[in-house]
Image (cartoon, rainbow, N blue to C red; front, side):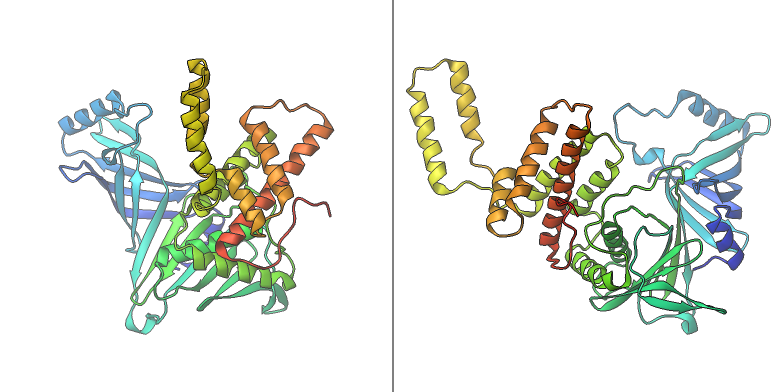
Length: 439
């Protein structure tokens, strides 16, 4: 970590300020990029957001006037269109200690003063990063990752840590393939750290480890800071956050609370990081959709989880649910027969359209094949069919305890189904919660 002790304490309190002697904001285009230069500050807001405030002096009054005119003309963005690179700026800032902090994809906002021929820029940052070259004596022979995050929802701490006056059960040591991952609990934050395997991408591997811990604990804990260290340098990245956003939580898939449960977390993390090489998998995307919808109304929760299961089946079980050759032959013969039957054209087209899609896989068929393979139980298929039909066809939810409890039961049954499919994909065979059952 490249922050001093006092800077890190200020960072934890969301009061970090980095005074910079020189900041350069450069438009992200190749030809004649616009540039702003001057002194300024990078700082955290009360909610943990990162911002930059800098002072730019124009070279002439005409330059100031042209920039002011552009501000009045607006951004030129078309509604519904992706924001092009030319609307973003990259940043290089040198602070009072000589460190160079970098950031990308910044939308420049501020106000221009014609009398002063200057512009004050105040913009949001997604993150800032500083790279430090390591001297020979400080170099390391292994690549490492380290995350600072708010406290993780559930962790099976299994080792004691000694302090000056006492010891506490605040260390979770996980033995995952070819390395060890540690989770440490401190007064104000949790640490997640470990070594990076030789053939894995340094940035992606740590992110996948943290993602697997989030899934296992049933919450989204975003990193506040990350440090990646390799043979020659160390990169410290500080992330913007918003403490006003509630932490998304959902029922976790595995027992993950007390020390004996460390074997479950160890198995899950090992299987997950072995299967997924980067944090942007379709599986992770579906899980994020489910957990982020968990605070919505019941109808939307039901729709999201049912469609995520369908998407997961298409992505990871593409060969399941396909009709057999006998059925396809019957469909072909039926189409030939229909051409000679005296029917109204609208009815004929409706039937032909229905038969036309029968050579593709179906989610229901895939689930029943997974029942035959012993991956899931038949009652979970019935639960998914029930909640899918209600959600897809906008069935009215009566405002009474019985109806609400029934849809909650279906929802948790589908959550168990989603987790079972996930475990099948990553080949996890450890303990799990059976969310469709009471007790």
